[in-house]
Length: 84
Image (cartoon, rainbow, N blue to C red; front, side):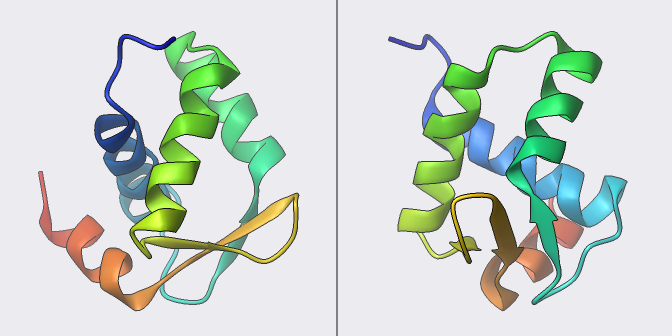
């Protein structure tokens, strides 16, 4: 089990999408790209990524369009741009 809270991982993912990649509501990214970014940039394993993605989807921050693609929702894209 992960020692990192799923909410923290979800927030980190959304901030990366909004600030780092400039994604806005409705724009998609592959989960593989997020997994690669997390591994290369942070040295984090995929276990935390899946927990964070599940949390974000359950809280309507992200929407899964398929097994390989996620999309930012308006609720989180706005907050991701505003939070530090």
